[in-house]
Image (tube, rainbow, N blue to C red; front, side, top):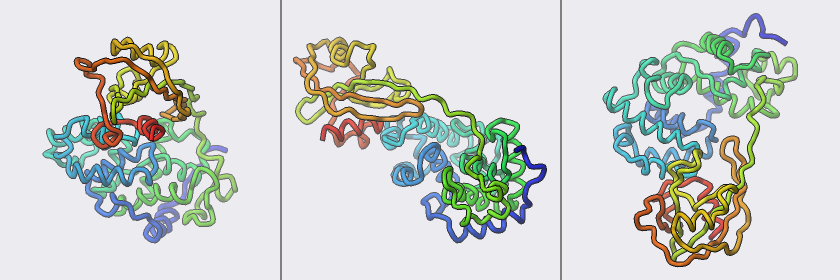
Length: 353
């Protein structure tokens, strides 16, 4: 099975696809007003995250930071707090730096030039093409995971769509299918088709508007595509979390040792090689700390890491955190509302409640 020598025509793809999209598209908050900043925020949030998860975060974020200028004036802690639980926190930091660049270099308006867009922190080829096409109607084809899946099935493509040469060819083909005056609708329709119909498993081929042009549907093997390399092997990580309570408040620590949670507030954690959370905290806080009750273990995934976390109630003598800026006391209701935390921290707090 090689790459077909020809692909379906624009008429084969765009007309039925756009008609289907007009009748079946989801009402999403960034679609109701596809202003460049709103599209930008939505695209960053949607990276590796489900639409249903993103919607409430998007609405809260836009309510607090309605413009790039408002975001550019925010502190990193303010941004991370609103991002708490959404994961992939580098996205939030890049979005903040990107807003500062847009305000500094483009008078607070996302640039219309593709080259200028690529100079904004956190904006790569996909994000630039998505913003310019959806918000400005510029004819830049987009290739996210959904579009890759749709295209490789239509073409019955044997090559890995994420190889540079193959990706370039797919963009050229998608550009040929795209009506120049319908770039926004076309790109969103391709993404929507992958999300609603052309799913990774058990695609609904009978409901697909372009099934007559789809080579994989014709051969009855769409689930064989796309042909991607094996996923990165998962790594099992075992952690201990130390729970120290003082009145209604719990001790938190700003993460510096875990690159995947850097800058967030957490219940203090330790890896097996640290000698245990009680020993590590005892040294850090200059206090006598003993391990008490162990709560039910928590399972959590962060990218390729599969975490098993053991929350331990710790018994302590008197100590102070004065002069130790990486520690603080916090009420449970402050997690994610006042302080930037990860969803792992929220899971521990939920276990405590």
